[in-house]
Image (cartoon, rainbow, N blue to C red; front, side):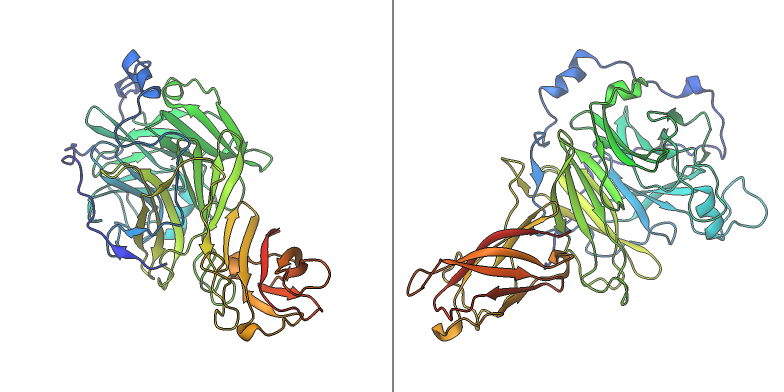
Length: 471
């Protein structure tokens, strides 16, 4: 889909000035600010949402045209992909977490600088604080925290507090992942180790691995995604104030589906993205970037939509998704890691869909309109997708009103809409001059071909209003 540039929103307030913490500083746990139980005013949030927020049932229109938030691809402090992004709900400043590059020593480290592989195995992270134009304002390093797949920012009394995984067990190969949730104040230039008293630790799912959090401060919730000891991935949702008191009462729980790059919680919805970088052999353009949307009240995937944003990027690796406040209302922010020396490109969608949660917009399909003209402006081929099901609508003629030939291929579906096996559907035809039933057979094959089969040599329009499953 084509992209337009938009002037980026400026930060709503000045950047908070924080003194650098001494490397590997140790502070008694009592020094970590503790949040008191919710007051009557805080409890009123459930009745009166913050200005510019959305009711729980509203959702972002994933068919809307996204805006390029920076108008460029941004280089972060390390030359690694951004794993997740988040925004301070008060100042509007952005935060991006990434794994550390090799060959660098942090304050307090001595000897040979660890390699990139060693940093991966240790779970050493860097959190970048970003201005509205993508400029890196400050960084903080977190050693032994994990992979950085989840990130939330909470603003308390002028201080941004980071929520992310922590307490990763070192591994000998691959990546280390956190097993607890940590809350730590963002402090420019600080280096903090997992287990330091500066980090408040939460253990909502004892024994879990690959655990990541997402904050929804507008609706007073936090969610975690974790992998159980049996290897099953699950989402759990909690009330934020109770969670901060270490009261882990689950309000919603449901299994996670599909491969996950990043995810976020907003209202009654979890938005999850997935996708790999282009590869000529295994993942050619347009790639395999998807959005998956869950209704937390039912645990069902209510939308699974192919992401066609920024298909022009040479390296396009799906990374990061969050919701931020803007003067125009909440904005779904998502991005891609780009270039050989990894950069970050971010895009935003502000348009929303209200009403029933099964309302998914129609999207047009490409077809040879000269050979098969549409039988009216409202009957051009189009589709909409909900979860694993694709519904098609079309009504077309054969050029010159010639007779239909059994096996005619009307169009070829794009790769993300192709089923794993051939599936049949029943369509309809005009009643004029037709002998026998007013129905015809359609098939969609694994290579995306949509064909019609009828031996009667009928003339006039033929139509389809039916669906099929991708798997």
